[in-house]
Figure 1 (cartoon, rainbow over the protein chains, first blue to last red):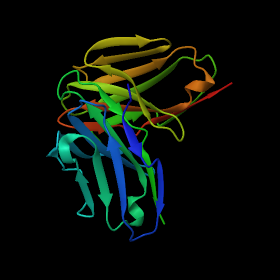
Figure 2 (cartoon, rainbow over the protein chains, first blue to last red; figure 1 turned 180 degrees about the vertical axis):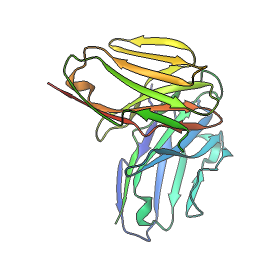
Figure 3 (cartoon, chains in turn blue, purple; figure 1 turned 90 degrees about the vertical axis):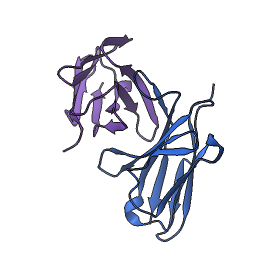
Figure 4 (cartoon, each protein chain N blue to C red; figure 1 turned 90 degrees about the horizontal axis):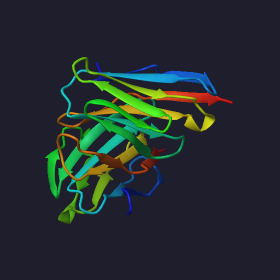
Amino acid sequence: EAGVTQFPSHSVIEKGQTVTLRCDPISGHDNLYWYRRVMGKEIKFLLHFVKESKQDESGMPNNRFLAERTGGTYSTLKVQPAELEDSGVYFCASSLLTGKNTEAFFGQGTRLTVV
Amino acid sequence: KNEVEQSPQNLTAQEGEFITINCSYSVGISALHWLQQHPGGGIVSLFMLSSGKKKHGRLIATINIQEKHSSLHITASHPRDSAVYICAVIGNQFYFGTGTSLTVIP
């Protein structure tokens, strides 16, 4: 069974450009989470989808970040325009259920470098 | 203050040593993950715990819900165990510790 997959694995863009990250969760997982790890800091929650709906987007840093999950399958995270401080590793995770004893599966991450 | 605190931040051990990494959290949780990240690699979930203790090979994880504390133990450590180990708790969202960077020297 395929795990959580993320594309691209690595992206280098210039400040002011746009980048779109993609996450394909495990098939059938309604819950999809985005996180990021900025250099030297802990992993921070960005948002949580349940199917196509945003359950919690309290971690989104500002309006330059836009996440979508059309059809409740894969999700995209767009950064427009990218700033230097957006550099980091963006992780996606999915889970079948929420709540007690829910196991989450993580993707390999997308390493974003803004120069 | 971070909702999840890990210690130590960095750990160097000789091959064969017994290793303990600690995690304390301040939020109410339904479960706790121990995650592993190799350099340049993605995150792998080692354990998910909601109570008691779990063991996979040389890895043992324990959790004390009342004390809001979990430990990850590695017995007979090996250089291939070198990685960043991250504690993550599931409350109303995931909260992550800053990670413990482990280096096992041959």
